[in-house]
Length: 66
Image (cartoon, rainbow, N blue to C red; front, side, top):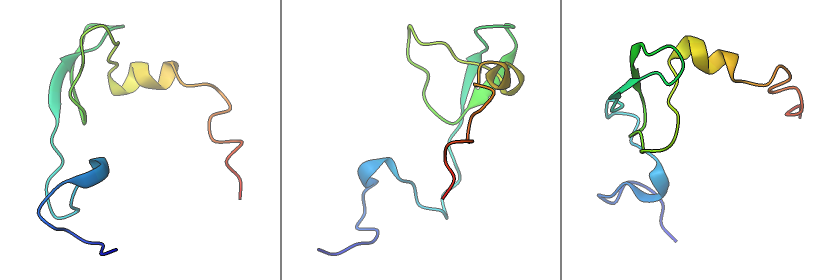
């Protein structure tokens, strides 16, 4: 099996040389305009950077020790 860039974006990974695409959105909590690195879908909340932090569990990352 060969790995590498064969012209397609397989598996949802992007080429590091390409700029990341951002989409305009409105925060579901505070209503502030923001940009997110994914295409928002109807029916799912989108949060700005500040509100996103509020929705994260306090112990996030504590279980991922190697």
